[in-house]
Structure formats: structure tokens, C-alpha cells
Image (cartoon, rainbow, N blue to C red; front, side, top):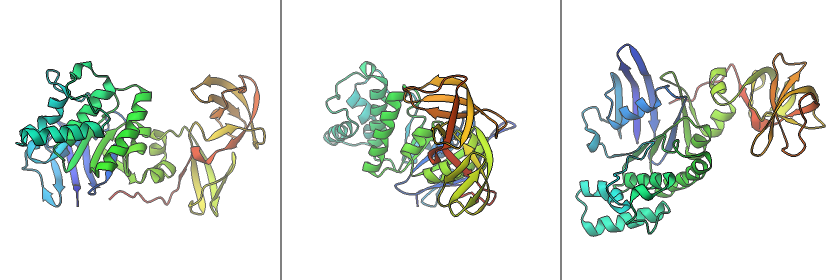
Length: 346
């Protein structure tokens, strides 16, 4: 059955940080709790861990209410943003800490430590001081320590946010593989879209203390619940459209979006929804150009849309400010918001 939250509410005085949250995480599932800073997602994770007492609602595991169960008796593992390793202990001692607390004998501890360090890519690091490790290596040790007692639920609170982007992206891929390889049930708190969609089987999007939408990553990304959710997911421009047989038409042209119900829709455009293409049907003037790692970001003034829109162009030979450019819609950057959308929250 796994984790079940029913009407969980956490207040700090008059402030309601978490409001009537219903959520579930099935055995073996990885759920990402995604939302902006200050939306209550870390508070909700702490309520699951037992570090915060809900003012209302229940936290249950396999149907059993955990309200009277102490943190250390819940059988949950925790990984925080800074890892919270013991600086005076070496890597092996850090990983073995939970095993010692559970009374596991020395030989079994050593075998488990060796197994986990190999699993997280740190084989041979047993005697290293944690203060000598890089940030990414320290987070790998923290993950190994949390996994050592084989927790029934792993709770990760912004585990990669302190790392630089390149390392964060690589470790997210590694962590996703690790969680699936070990069959770990996990609740991951993050504000990073890429991290959430890399790690999760399902994404729960949280805003202002409430769960706004729950679903598989591709569904949440393609069909946000409303414009506010779409805005958090990177949509900066919204235009009306009409869907028919999986094709959505708008003032920006037509785009194939299979699975879209016929009728009126709103299209949410991310930065990559429009791209420069000599065969594009929409023409505009470039008012700004910025270079990114693998593309040029344009701001284009169009006659058919009130405000300038974002678009992308190749790094080599992109149009410059004042140039006229033709644009075409790219379905990978388009979200669909339908009035009849039904939130898939549990």
C-alpha cells in the first residue's frame, strides 16, 4: 500500500503552510513533490518524517496511522540538501551509522557498506574523510547512509540543489537509476523541473500549501491544470486555440498535439515553443537576442500577439536584433490547457 496522506494540514500560528493535502506513494514508486520555494513542500516532507506534527489529517503507512510513532521508529530514511554527514567520521563510518543503531554486527555492516559504496559509485572510498570529498561525492555518501538500513520509504529534501548544474544533472540521472535498481519507495522534494521529471514516476505539483496537480511527468508537462500551474512549468505566453483530431490551430499556426480533446483550448508556450524556420508561417522582428549553451534565445515582436514572444534559433548564425524572422511552432515546447481538464490528484 505504501504512504497515504489524508487532509494533512500544518500551521505556524495563523499561517497555514500545508493545507488539506491528500497524497499517496505506492510501494516501489518515486514521487516528486515539485513547487516553488516557500510553497510548503519541505514542511509536508517533515510531517511525513515525523519532524512536524500536523494540526489536522493523517499520515499512514500500509494503512497504519503514524501520528504516535517517533521519527526513529518509522523506518524512513532522510537525505537533506547538505547531506548532514559526520565530519569527524570517515566514509565507511558515516554509511554504517544507521546499521550500528540497528544493532547490525560488524561483519554484516562492513559487507553492506561495501555493497552500497559500489552502488553509488564510491567503491574504495571507505577510509576517506568526508571533508576531503567533493559536494557530489558527499551527497552520494549521504544517499548510501540513508539506504543502508533498507528504509521502507526514502525522503529526499532538495538533495541536489547545492550542486552546480552540470553535476546536478548527472547525479539526478544516477539517482534515478539507483532508486529503480534498489526498488526504493521515495518522496523527493524539489523546485527543479528537470530534476523532478528525471527522477519521478509521478509528479505532485504544489503551490501555496496545496497540491494542484498529480500525474505522470509527461501528462503534467503537456497538460497543466491551469495557467498558474503552466506558468510555474515555464509557460510565458498564452494564446487561444481550437483542437480538432489532435491538431490545435491558433494565430501562431497549427501544431500536432495527439490526445487533445476537440474544442477550445489555451496553448501555453515555453521558451522553445517557437523556433526560427525559413518556412514558418509567422513573421516577426527580433527585439533581443541572448546566447545560451546550445541555442540562441530570441525575443520577437509579432503582429498577431500583444506582447513579444520568446523563440529559439541555432547557435551558429542566429538572427540579430532588428532582423525579421519566420517562426514555426514546436510541439515539444507547447502545453495544452483545457477547460474540461480534470485534476488527477488521488
